[in-house]
Each structure stands twice: as C-alpha cells, then as structure tokens.
Image (cartoon, rainbow, N blue to C red):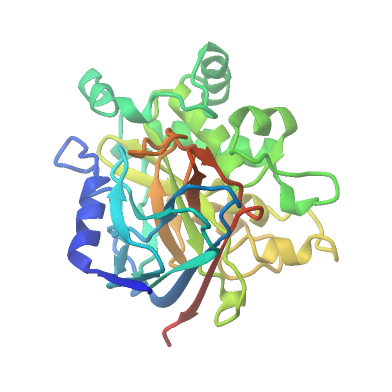
Length: 373
C-alpha cells in the first residue's frame, strides 16, 4: 500500500519561519532569507523529486531524511504531495530546516521509491549591496549573529584563516566592501573544476581546506572557502543549499543535481546574496571544448556561451530565479539520526541500522521539472 500525504502551504510557511534569524536595526535580517530590492515577476516550476532506495540485505531498520522545498521570501511552494510505500512525516533540524522523514522496518526490506511533487514560484533576488549604507558590526550584533561566525567541520575559523582574511581585506571592518574583496580574491585564485575536468575535481564533502590547497572545487568547496574567510573576517555568513531548474533540462528526464550559494549579513543591509562559484565561469578565462562544454552549461541556470563581466558583477548581490531552496546551514543536527550532525542535506540522508548509506550505492535521487509557460 502506498501512503499519500499532502503537506500544505501552512506547514511550509512554518518551515520558512523556523529558519529565520532576526537581524537588528528594524529587523533587516529577513525571514530566513534576504532583504531583497524590488524584483521583476519570477517563474513557476512544476517539479518531481524522486528517491529510489535499495536497503542492504540484512537491514532491520531504515531511516531516511529527504530534502524538501522550503518556503522563503523569494520562493513560494504550493502543496507538496508525498507518495511512499512506508509511513512518513515532516521533521525539522536545529537550524529551522524541514525534511520528509520515512522509516521502514524489516526483515526482508525491499527496494522502494519515495516521490515528492510540488510547484514552486520563484523570484530573482536583488539585494543591492552598498557599502555606504553599512558599517562595522557592533558587539551586540556580533552576539546576535554568533551562530554565523563560528566554524563548521569543513569550514575552519581560526588564526590561520583570520590572518589570510585580514591580508585579503586589509582589515576592512565594513562587511559589504570586505565581502567584495573576498569575492574578487576568490575569482582570481580559485577555478571551478568544470572548466578543466581533465585535471581538476571537487572534494566529496565541501571543504574550505581542500579548495584552498587545490585552488579548485565545486560550488560547495568554493563557498566553504569563502565562508571560512568571511567568518574569520567577522562577517556573519551562511550557506544556502538548493538546485537549479536548468533551462537546458526543462521537461527532460534528467536530474538537476544540487547547487549552493552564500548569504552574508551587513548592518543596514540585512542578508546579502552572492554566488561566486557561478560568477567564476563568467570571468571567461578558459576555452570551451568537448570535455568541458556540457559540464559548464549545466553548472549554470540558463546556459553558457562565453565570459560576461556583467554576470560577474550581477552575482555579487543578486541571484537568478531558476532555483529552489532545500536548506540553510552546515552540520545539521537531526533528531534520531545516528550520523548527526549531518554535513549537508541537499538530497537525502539515509541510515540502515544506524549506519549511513552512500548515494549511488544504496540510493539515488532525480529532480525533474517543467516550467509553467
């Protein structure tokens, strides 16, 4: 028997409220998102989020947490319909994110599929970073933003990183201008691995140290590096995990993978977005060829033809409207997960008798979509 559940918009609104972190100065921290300038009408996408799970032969208890869309100031999610052969519910973590939780008990557990279907309306985010409208954080603001100034398992904040951050920013106390210096430094010193897939690769965990050492990585490596530097410079920062709705894959039976980006907080400005990883592609300092062309195109929202300085500028303070948010934060503490804290959860976290199962070996995920015309 298949269990069907409709998670209504009210529950999703609660999810958005749960990941809020109020700012100061008139609440410019936003409701879990950013302080956005006026944006044009966005896009709507009908999505199918499917997970295929193959339990180990001797598994007695399988616990699964599946990423689900969150409501967000730039994102409105309609009713989410969940279909599963096992009972399921919606559970939260310590950072205000929500997941579809499925538990299956043996013996003789069989392979199964869990499907989420939903419609999301998404707006472009324009946060208009302006250093003249910001200033250094006060002690009270640093205290309020303390969770976004601490390190994570793969995002160190220590004396080594503070020294480098100071060298890059010149000790600039203004979080907007200092963040731009970190953004520009990243573009000059790190290469997105898809540019040169024959000699570069990403880490499997989203590691600032890996990215610094190898000067390459994927979006999670790029943004882990940026976050380590920003937090070490005293800039409150959080990572946002989601997926693109890639224009090239509209209506196709191909997975959208995942993507992440940055939000940093500045007095007088609130949460400001950027995506230095995608911006790196638009620097245009590489040639397209048979090895990288498809990878580069599919690492962006709407495709890639050549470098574009305007897009490099755009992605500091703005993000496109072809995205969905799965969660914010790293080192997620999830109740009843033996592997908690979980590094990140842009797809799924699955445990068999308390042991984590690897993607592609025991489970797969496929996100497909069609854009409403």
